[in-house]
Amino acid sequence: MKAFYKAADLSVLCGLFGKSRQAYYEQLWHEAKERFQDAIIVDLVKHERRVARRVGGRNLYLILRPSLEARQVFIGRDRFFEVLRQNGLLAKRRRRRTVTTLSRHALPLYPNLAKGLQVVQAEQLWICGG
Image 1 (tube, rainbow, N blue to C red):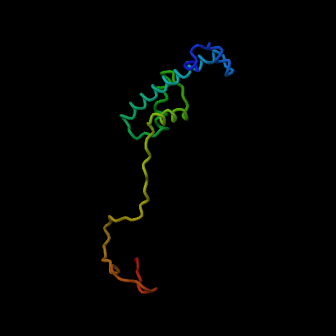
Image 2: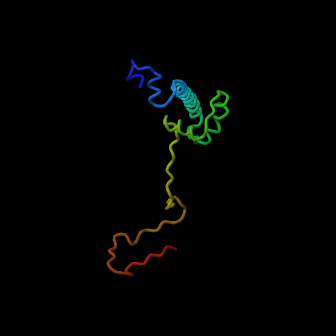
Image 3: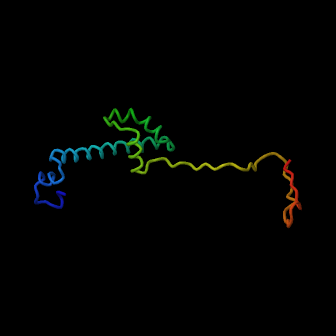
């Protein structure tokens, strides 16, 4: 708001929103501190990802927590995940596919005798899987 109304006093603008000047400056300080902490987290995560690329978020949080506390950054798990998400640092989940056929086996392979056969009625073709 101060950028739009340069001539207006800050205490008047804060009064319009029911806030004090102290609350305004406290918010500015809090946002700056949060950006600084986020930058520390991003640097530590990038360094750790160079060593172990596919470490998940929870394990990464547990690994980095002592380093963060040594730097006076006290952050919870959910906020940690939010910082990773905002900076595109979450590990991509691998898609697991269901294995339905085991083609590499040592069992004998038999020719497909039903290939090319036109089945037009019930019980015209019987197949045994044994």
